[in-house]
Image (cartoon, rainbow, N blue to C red; front, side):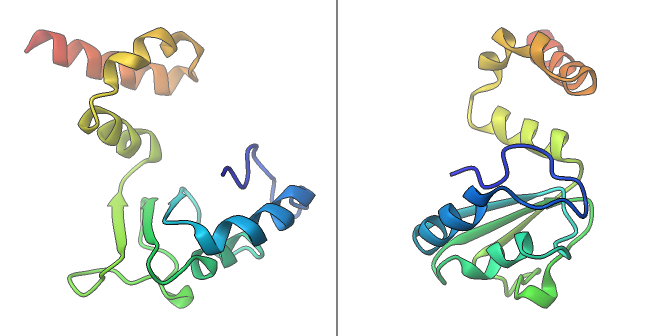
Length: 129
């Protein structure tokens, strides 16, 4: 489930769906992807500890965040994974690894310019190989 489908500016309230859906979805979530956030603003930051102990948590960010919320980094982390870098670059790596890069060709012109440039560059590099 998408918890925050649109950007919410600091100080703005979350939509009512956040509260109703997160109460239902978080206990059964098996994969939580946290991308591009400092994890300091409540109540959104509560999601990282509301998933089950079996849920995998992937943090995509420039810097490690959320240690005070129980996220663990390093060799002893058994369910937390850190993908360091920009969200665009890290998700493009994942898309490429999953074999979905070609699928982006159909929507590349709908992406923000910087994202589209990154995708086009990756597609060109793959075609040159």
